[in-house]
Amino acid sequence: MVERPNKPSSLVATPGLPPQPTVNFSDDNSLVTATLPTGESITVLLYGATVISWKDSSSTEKLWLSSAAKLDGTKPVRGGIPLVFPVFGPPPADHAQTSSLPQHGFARTSRWEFLGKSTSESSGDQQTGDLSVKLDFGLSSAADGLDPKGKAAWPFKFNLIYSVTLNRRDLTTSLVVTNDDERAFDCQVLMHTYLKVKDITNVTISGLDSSSYVDKVDAASTKTQSGEIRIEGETDRVYTADGPVTVSEGGKTLFTVTRDNLSNVVVWNPWVEKAKGMGDFEPKDGYREMLCVEPGSVGGWQTLEKGDAFEGAQTIALGA
Ligand SMILES: O=P(O)(O)OC[C@H]1O[C@@H](O)[C@H](O)[C@@H](O)[C@@H]1O
Image (cartoon, rainbow, N blue to C red):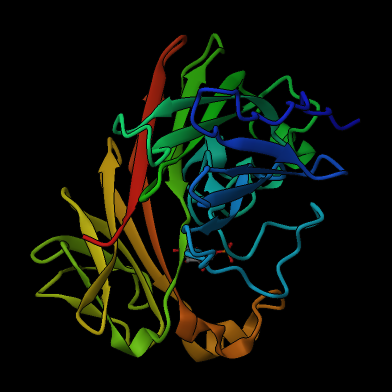
């Protein structure tokens, strides 16, 4: 039985106050959309708490979503921002706790509960309605929506709170993992962000110069980045780095990604052959219009003792 979210009433304009953000559910309660008075919006699918849309004030989409993405809860969403927890990639055979989990864990295949919304002024500019809206989602080991495959493979008591905050010029996603078990557990966390670009051949990624990375398309060898990154073929790299990562196209900065407590960034583009092999990746040349920049903590394990919590966040700003 799937839990129904608490259905919020839209936040409406009050006489004398500037217009407020609106928060609405789809009729089937599967999607929640938040819109700022200035027109920016996000849409989150409760399945996976997957952000599937982020639009600026001119309704221009900032996230890539496959036209064949399944949004009905039958498989992880191909696009948007799926959440990876408690294991990144195929579970390592030598890590007993996670070895039976599906690739990228179960957070992206569980139905999350909507916990509520809050609004605040971003910069105090009431005339322009410079407000932000935060949506909170929860998933715990006791939740009805927990993917049964995850529950069977990872029998720990845990609690996850995922917050998605929309400002006029940026989007922040933040995950808090709490260990509610008597035993310690290991976990990895990653925000698998599919950014939308116009033409990947004009894209450069900077901020990772001199950082070491594991090259997953070259036998997981460890390398050091030299200069900017250009995507010229299948790319699947796990960087360890501090500092902002910028994505530019034709010399113009599209996105600046900053991280809090997430020491890795995965840069992924499937390119021609891998895109062909994914049934839910459409159009097949869509790899030209997307780039995954995925902040995470996946280089090792976060070991949480009973009662411990781990929090990590990304902020994706539009422009520099
Ligand atoms: O097909 P999935 O499970 O969504 O994974 C997509 C990609 O996700 C990336 O994070 C991984 O580094 C890739 O190796 C993987 O192919």
